[in-house]
Amino acid sequence: MPGTPPIDYAAEAIYRVDGKGRVRGSWTDNSGRTRPIGGRVTGWEWHNLWGSADVEICRSTYVLEAPDRMIVTDSVLKDDGRWRVFATLRFQQKP
Image (tube, rainbow, N blue to C red; front, side, top):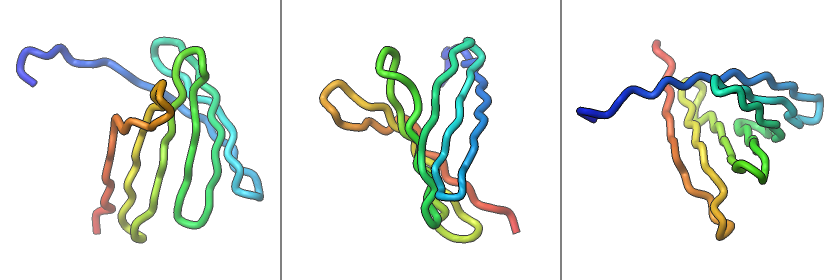
């Protein structure tokens, strides 16, 4: 948007997936915050919960729609117990 200052944000996540599809890890951003990650990989889907109750709890869902297409959705848990989507990304592999 015109007049909006750019956002400088970066993060790095380290995941470990065990033989049962359970995901554990952490995510550290450029503000210095580290968030725990827990989730599960099943079939063509990967679901992660990350964050902590004292800051925020979020969910990332990765769905492989086709061998060359993936959709990623990020949501935050609201005080009323509902999830609010704040980012949706669609990826298409180039031929």
